[in-house]
Length: 214
Image (cartoon, rainbow, N blue to C red; front, side, top):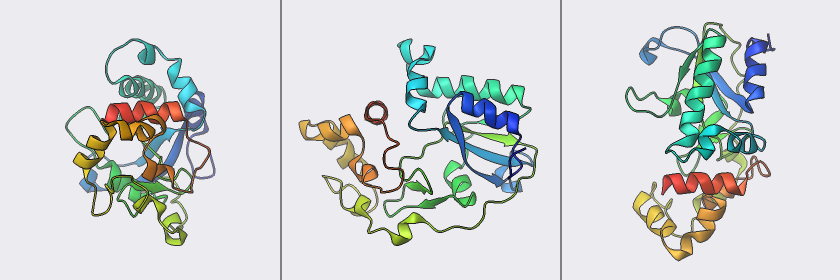
């Protein structure tokens, strides 16, 4: 077991796939998934991207390569470790990953509304969650990094898509224009200005996600 009570074999299995636990929280009856602890699983940057690009899903030319890799990998791992894999994609039922993340004590709502993580900043993402039966020690209360930040994420977007909420049509129109090339090549500029997690982000990975978003 780790210091928080996560089975060490599960952690090792995740590490082998360059995945990490970004936080955890106890389930509640309102979650309607049964009792236990939810482990929020994300990529272990900057190593994950190279690992994923060597997978059959990345090179088979079929849609949703990363989602299919995540489903295969986490479902197999869950079966091995007596856990249940839950995903933020694939259709109903739609699970409240945003709310679960906030309950971990390691994520907060950023000034632009996206989740910000204590060590991954605005580029944290979920490949899924694992529901395990163990009761884990709660994460010690901590402070959002946004409380001491001047919020460059709020003002960096070249089309002001975050000036009042999130103007998705303006964002996508910009990405589809020649002026959107920097965002498409290197990722969302608003997210990239987050000082937390600098140096963990791969441009090729950002471009992959931006293409999928557009």
